[in-house]
Length: 358
Image 1 (tube, rainbow, N blue to C red):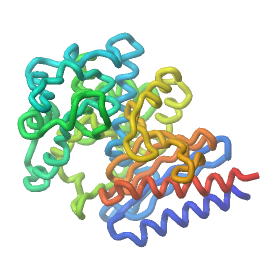
Image 2 (cartoon, rainbow, N blue to C red; image 1 turned 45 degrees about the vertical axis):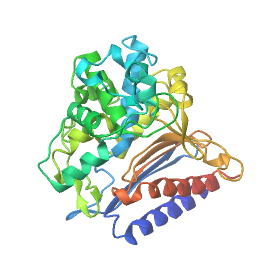
Image 3 (cartoon, one colour; image 1 turned 45 degrees about the horizontal axis):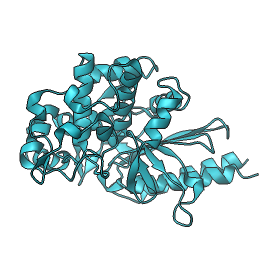
């Protein structure tokens, strides 16, 4: 009975959130817990004239970083690279020359793969200025490699490597290029070979780079910035790349998270490194290897919210709550939900905790 009450409360809260916010044109939510015998997968709103459906694929924005970090971790376990490797071992001279010059000192040789993973390289972030260029000029096109070179020329680093978290997609462009150099395959192909195919994620792809193993029966959900539908920008993928890019149904995302939690895609020991070798991203939240981890802080961040996963700028989130054995996956598909998506997820956790009360 408590589960049914929680489902109704969560669904009502979700639909009300979307219906009352004109910026949230469509939204998607999956909540699953074997412990609570709980599963719901719902959608609200529309994609153009297409009513939002739980079976629609979503662009998950920076949630894709967790996929990139997982691929690096697979390569680490295979011995193809190490978290401790200097990036000099895996990238070419054109990219590396003057990549990180801060206050007159070149720190490029000090950057390790783990610094890219946990956002402590100190490098610039070219994503947002390049996104503005794309919004101004729809045909603007730049490859991930060109984006790194552009940032090196036009932007400044934040500080020396290893000092503090400075969230930047440039780190994940470089990780994507390292993956390509290490495997000899395009990043989207590695995504398929290492994750989508082994896990049976037939409704997953990479935005503007690849198609799913089974053709989508419904349009990919629209995602927006300032009331502009970003799906229409065909060159958006070039400035997203390994910093995001994953498109999938919530059920396929659940397959990925379950595999990650249970040690079916990387070892549990490697997952612990991904989670715990991190630094503070926000108050109460550490950033590991593509992993956001909510930390217990008395009064400010109660232990009941302790969970880990990844979030994206469109209000996308994909988290696991160990105490409840619960997976929380959702997306509000608008940049105005950058932080509101996480706040909504915490409200869902509250409802699940009530359902778990004896």
